[in-house]
Image 1 (spheres, rainbow, N blue to C red):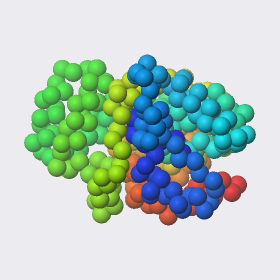
Image 2 (cartoon, one colour):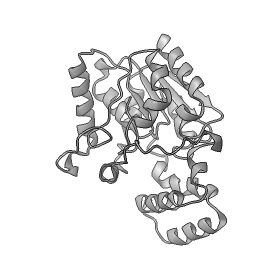
Image 3 (tube, rainbow, N blue to C red):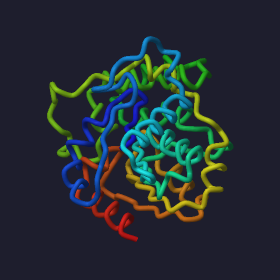
Image 4 (cartoon, helix red, strand yellow):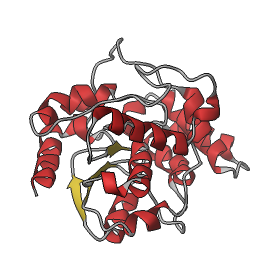
Length: 260
């Protein structure tokens, strides 16, 4: 399981569908360097995609497993995909949950984030965000402002969950996000990744929530169109956290894919 963020951990997914998926296949939950239960590196210089790919390969070697199925979630899909490109001989197939892997002609997740945040703010919050972003053109600056607005919004949960009844209670044991890692990696995505991934001709399951505002629906849909052996599973009652909103259907989609 390759968690997202960047800078989050595998904690929430392990608790939502971990036990159910462990009855389907062996599952390894790990936290990337500096995240969750893993140790902090000496500095932010090692927060690079190349290092994270090397870490994942080192983990595979240590486990003594010849071929794995990287299961990426959100930003973790980028790492899972980069690993598959670098070590295709060690990848059986690929699972991508809300992959932010866009064609180079697409404006990208970060450019679209303020527009995704805007509809779920209150009227006053919306006016304030638009005023704050007036004249700001740099995508990462605009994204940071939008995320700050949604974090403080009375409607914050609507950005993360389609159905408010699916919002989990606060968990004091959940590890905090590694913001240093996030700032080191955000916006460093490789434009040619989608072309390299499409050239692999690898069985790939793409899981997409119809109401996902983090990544949107068009990016996973178009990625499925590009990949020669892609299966697109659409979850009509989920936003970004499909594993929490439709856990039974989520696990079943993975089970069917692995059984082929």
